[in-house]
Image (tube, rainbow, N blue to C red; front, side, top):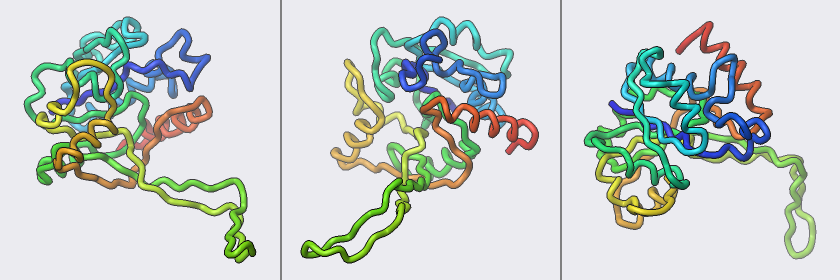
Length: 232
């Protein structure tokens, strides 16, 4: 099984940290974010990894090399210009079996093997790993009817099912990605749906964190320390 990690972004939301260090190399508990992902894949027996790179590609390649010191095999593609989260898949040769795709800023305990098995059994062209996310409004909301207040709810919580930035992709889905220009995974999903293709959803409740801001780095470090002392 191949795993593709999309690691070509500029990490603008984590500036100034990413002015000199690409986001995948930002340290979390003394290891780069991306190294935690690679080690998680290895622990689950997924050792054929491809990194799609853009900003900071030279630094990332210098750190990971061919992957031998991490017990995996790592290959690379480079974007000459930003291609989004799905566009880089067109640069990869030899994707003849369903493969795993994930963003390069994730910590999770999702069992990727079970996820890929569910995808194969479903017959879907693409499967999205999804997780429940609760959002609390910082204000009270007012209900009104006919100009009169009928109720007020203090700081309500809404629940959503969000994409975890993790996908199982069958090779046939790659035909929907344009040869040129940037193309995102949401655009790929919508293109498949417009063509009447099967897009599946795999809901999970395991730990997951998409690192988007500096305040999340400490939470990520705490989880990494926990995984080190109690893996699984």
